[in-house]
Length: 191
Image: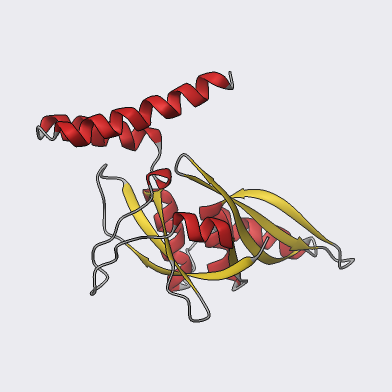
């Protein structure tokens, strides 16, 4: 798979539901593609601390993990987003051991991003994911865009459907209902 290097571009203010944020990642090297991840308040705080190079009075989890890795002779070398399904982004953290071997560990994408901001190792995404999930219809000033429905988790879809019904936007509500049913049918298939 072709890996495309990305970086954290921006993070939104609070979205609905009130504890959600949109984290925007941007392709490096002249490309203009961007990804949006919907993340929680705690994940947003950890990423913001990494962006600001803030050192808390006592170590947070990411700081603890990096400290343990360092003491054990482990060095994170890169993070790769390898999958997105039903709004959940999955990543690998690649780590070099003292004997120079490299292993990969499955990780939450927000954790890999938080570690990357603290340790300054590169982030990548597989090109097919970037192409499929990229933000579309970005306004000239960059303030408005459309995200792939795959970027949104099922609970957020249900909340958006309820809001659409409340606002009497029945066409939108039925589109969201159909997507929810499709995902729930898929989940039942694997049980």
